[in-house]
Each structure stands twice: as C-alpha cells, then as structure tokens.
Length: 272
Image (cartoon, rainbow, N blue to C red; front, side, top):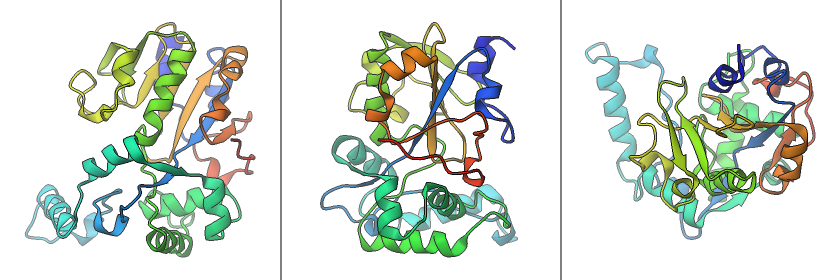
C-alpha cells in the first residue's frame, strides 16, 4: 500500500497507529476535541451533540428512518438554538475547556477515563467497556456549569481555524480535503479553510463532510476517527515537531503501541 492509500485509509481499530503508517509518517499526535463554553449560552437550551437511538426501541409501526426523523424533531422542541447555530458560535466565540481541567473538576483520574465517559454517552462502546456512572457524572457536571461537550467523528468547529493555520505554517497554500472513504477529494486554497464559516456548510468542500486534510505532497495528514473524540495529526519527526503542535492543541504523542482505542491502554501524559 503506497503513501496515497495510507492517507485515505485509517488504521484498523486493533492496529497500532504508527505501525500502520510505517514508512509514511514517523510521528503522530492525538489532538483531543475540546469542551467549550460560549458566554451567555446554556447547553440545556440548545440542540447539541449526538442523538443516540437504539433500533430495539423503535416503534413497530414506524420505519427506522421515519422514527429517527421524529426523534430528531422532538429533540429540537423548546430549544432556542439549533446544532448548526451552536457550531457557528463555537467557532467564532467559543472558549475552550481543556480535558486536563475537566478531569480535575469532574473527578476523572485521567483523560482515558474521560474518553470512556464520552464514548459511553454516545453508545460507542461495548457493554463491558462502557461506564454509565462516569458518563452520567460528566453529563451532570457539564449541565451544571454550562459546558458543551465535544462531538465525535468530525473536525470540531473550535479546532478548524487552528488546523488551517497548521497547514499554512507548514508552507502549504493548498490542501487536499477528503471524505471518510476517499470517494470525494478536492484540492482547495488554504484561504477557504481559514474563513469564519463552518466547513460543513461550504459548497466547495465534500458533500458528506470532511474527515481528512492532506498536504499535496502527503507529508502532513489530519484525520478523524468516525466515533472518537480526537483528531489524529501525522507527519515526519523534524517537520511535525517544528510546527509545535502541542502549543495549538491539547493531546499526546503516539507511542509505538497507541491504537485508535487508546482508552484501553496505558495513559500517555497530556501535553499543552
């Protein structure tokens, strides 16, 4: 598999990240998706986050899609701001709240426990890995302190400007943007990604959302795992460390063992 193919495909869940990209990228940084607040905005009055549904709960008289549409509409009842509105405010006015701070204030031993709570909340873990009590504790703390939780599987609005700056700092005036499976890839000017607009609302970008940012020479890659709360940034050692990623993003450097489900591994120290 050549460098282009590796940039299109993320590693299998049980495969070490750096082993998968061996010979392509030498260093990887896991940038965790930040919590955030917006002055004057209460998450309890906003539509935000993943709508979690279980097919086993669907009414027999409704199809799954029809039921999902009804549940989505019901969630919007009484909400003052839509999910898109929250995202726009987060990008322009959001104040990031670090995972380190959340661990300290919400009584989590480390960021692996916090990640487990987040992923339990979206139904993203098997029952034997989930921690419902931790998920409920996190939800209560965020509700009481008007803190928005991050979203999974996307480039977070609060990180988009920093990601664009990263590629410009690396010397790229154009970036390849791609969807999850590489079916829709486009070479765009970096200026497009530097706008205040949400990437998901731009007609010039992939219709079904951006999951990958790739340098034209494939020396730098940013990629999001479909149901995880982090963005993976990959590059070569010298160039990546010179960019001082840890000054722009909270996270940790991959070890040789780090895989996409790092919540089950030894916690590596957060950096920022």
